[in-house]
Image (cartoon, rainbow, N blue to C red; front, top):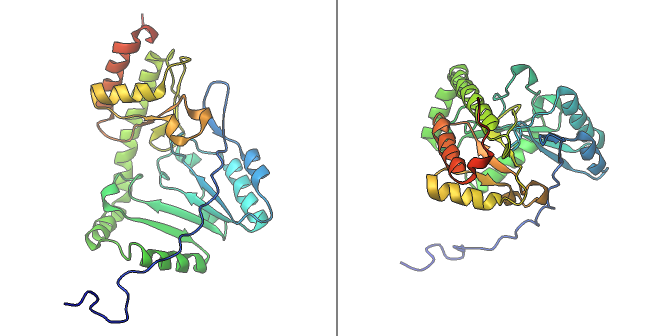
Length: 283
C-alpha cells in the first residue's frame, strides 16, 4: 500500500493556532470575615465599548458564590450596554442553597447571552460527557456546531440515550443531589466549627465547592494538601493552582459526593494529627 492512498490529498496538514486570550481578570474580593464575594462594580470598570464578550460562572467554582438578582441584572446590563456577548458557565445551576436565589439563565436574560449547561455537575453524571449551549443568536449556534464538527464531531450515541433518560428524570435526580448537598453542607459546617481557629469555612450559596481560607499565618496550603493526600488519600486543591497570589492561602474543597463524610473524616484525622492545638473543644 502506498504511503498516501489518495494521491494529491495530504494525510497531515498544518493549521494556524488562534492567538492566546488575554489573562482573565479575577473580580472577587473578600469581606472582612473572609467570605469571597463578587464585585459588579469591578466588572463595570473593565467593560469598554470594544468589549466583545464577558464571561461569568455562577454558581461559582471554586467559591460557591452566587450574586443577587440585582447584581446579575447589572452584569447583564453591562454586556447589553456595549453589545457584548455574555457567556455564562451555568454547570452548577439547580444546586443553589435556596431555590429563590436561582438566576435567570443568560440565554433568557439577554439576546446575546450564551448559557453553558450539562449533566456532569447538577445531576452528577460526568461520565456521559454531555452538555449544551443555549443562545438566541443563531450565528453563535452555527459557529459552535462548526467548531464541534472539527473537534469532537459528535457525542457518543449511548451517552445521548442515557442523557435523555436523565433529563426525563431530572426532578428525581435533582432531589437526590440536593439531599446529598444539604447533608454534606451541614457536616462541613460542623467541621468548620471544630477547626474555626485554623480554617475560615463559610456557607456557600450554590454549587458543590467551597474555598475556605487557612487562617494560620505561614502555614503552607500546598504542604497541607500534599500531606493530606499522602497520609490519608484525600484530595483538596491548594489555592496556588489558580495563580492568584491573593488566594494562595485558600483551599478548594468539594462536597458534592455521597462519600464526602468519609473524606471529611480523613481531613479531620490529618488535622488532629498535625494541627490538633487549633481544634475547638466543645464542653
